[in-house]
Amino acid sequence: MSVARLDAMIESAAQSICDPAQMLDALPAQLAAQWPEAPALELAVALASAADAVQAVFGEGGESGQRAQRVWRQAAMVGADVHYLTLSGAAAQNAGDLLALWRREDGMEGSS
Image (cartoon, rainbow, N blue to C red):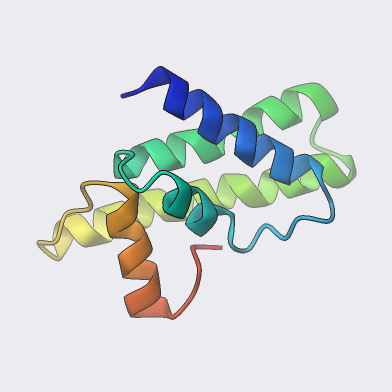
């Protein structure tokens, strides 16, 4: 795991959470597209860490706290997608593999 990469992913996600003009639906896919070489579960760690950091500063209430709660759910869905790929025999090695799954299976830009 690259600490610098993880820190950058967390920072990017936290900025998106705190900016109400940013749509969160595509956040996992945006991170996966920017860091396709990142281990698949690192994406879930980045999302969860960003959500935790935002809630630690702003609490669970308010707009940022509610947006962070949505990103917590996205982190859980990323973990579920990694598990799904593992069970199907096509283990997600990196975030790029998840991005390919989302595009192929859901026709969506990330879990939400």
